[in-house]
Length: 319
Image (tube, rainbow, N blue to C red):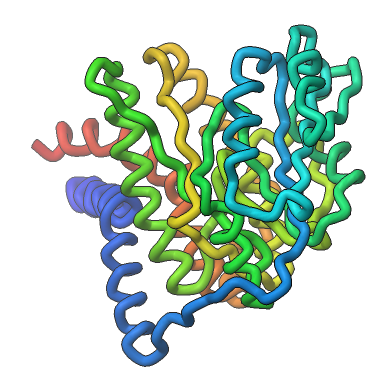
């Protein structure tokens, strides 16, 4: 009995260590070995810049329409090749009224509110450009973001580009902001290493882009639309490139209550994603992508949290 509990304890401890620290170490070593024999390729802008759609879904965002539009207008990309599309389904405040002040913004609106995923599905029917960049209404992206993303698509094997998410932290901010900022810095490092090994595992909705021709409609009850969309593209044999030179900045959760709501949604969305992406667990079919997906996502969302909670009672019994 003692031996069984001892073995279970060490298995749980290993899972926790590997998921949160060990995978990062393995990933770093693997990337260094790969790049020793195959240096990274330097990507350049194409001679003819492609048309790009900046795709924004918004619900009752009247307070930030102005700052977001000014941010979009300041982007370093030819204005005649950048279309700004807002999908504002269900909004009941002055979001549409405020957007009417900007003739360079295309607004797609219907009174019925069916959620963000449904808004993306509906809005993508009107996109004609080869590249679509998704960004949230409450985030600001850097001036060079569009060109940096377009560079990544010069690699024909790249089907999705994940931008970097940055958290704006101020001295007066609350505990969630500091913790969230530290988490995203670590997460950004892992995504960069994932991308350099083979492919980033998913993308953050604050800023990511896809080849429009690879888009496929998602189930409307999808909780993590950004993750599912990027992983569907990965299943087709394309990689997700991580671009740290294209980044979106947003404020952290205002308080612990808001942070809890966000974490619960991510946890539920993670479990939903694992169920719907079951084929990606087949490492014999998807190889390196499966290894990265299981190590970076599946363990975090399924087995490891249970192992973490089991460590305390198992350790107490052993003591």
